[in-house]
Length: 480
Image (tube, rainbow, N blue to C red; front, side, top):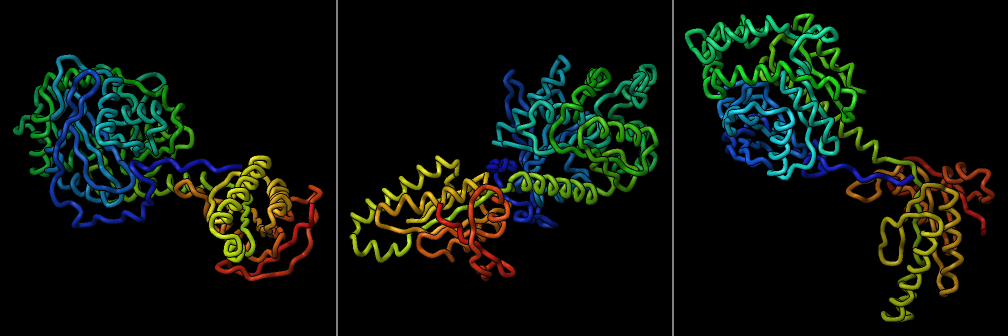
């Protein structure tokens, strides 16, 4: 079985641990607001902060303003924590915040184009996307539509539907929605009624947050700067009709649904239901009762997302480890032979040797991994084919007046930057170094896996392999 190439993580294939920077000094200045342009000529405001190996996109709930959010200390701390291991991407959806204001309410599909335009503008190949509250609908749709561009999906509560239905009892009834919307429109952005606005915006922790004057001031300023009352009404009604439940079973990327233990039973049930609709999704419980991911213990939220990202990386690394048989060959006494023949004749001999080896690798379905001087490193998806290929190489190159040695081992081979690596490769190389001229040596694993193939082996004793724990018994493959 041959290995698949490791998928790109954002812009690189670096490990998370290699980018563990950040901390208190990570956030020096607020990032510059930039604009990307969609195919329909809408300008989308976005910011990028951090340079970790993973691209992390945070999809805000309905109201956002990429510059005003930096005035919220918990949001700044959240970005600070995440930017220690990721490049954080923030944006205002069309019609909101600093993006182009529109007369018509954009569809969810149009907002999908907003995110894609931002990613294209910054050269982001794959993202870990998180949807905060009703931002979950856009995040889920992106993950289902572009699985090749999505490393993983994190949903805060769910946010995949707003309206109540017979099969979705956690949503809002239309009457309650209209009554609530009328009040919100009346008090939208009004600092004198900021406590009321805060309680209506944050239903779980609203009572406590409403007693924080600085937070109330920030909420009402955000409302005024992010959207006008008419925008509130139009967009709220659009979200009431939004329903992406049907796409949940089609999501193929690793997914985590995050919730807080202090939430009401209705929100807890909604989060659990959402996780149950996505194949393999995790339901992760966090402390507190705050409505938003960027409120409360944001350090816990960021740490949870990081562990989720690390688990995805480990999963992909496991995909890149496959069982394979490695073969190492090299010409015996190559330095002496080169000196006898001279540079030109030696070069011609090596070319003939390479041609024979490559022809036999193709015949036995081997994959050439590397060639260093007069040596070959190849992998096979079957140990018997690897042994027979090694035997054929030994016989074939004899007609050139040279001898080769060969070593084989079967084990888990990891693909690293397109190259095969790991302990199995080291063992195969060490076994090859033990071989005598025209000898094919194999590990016990190879011998055991080729039982019944008709290949005969002779015990060649136990040996210490440099850099490999314990002693290893090797076997000599009898001449074909």
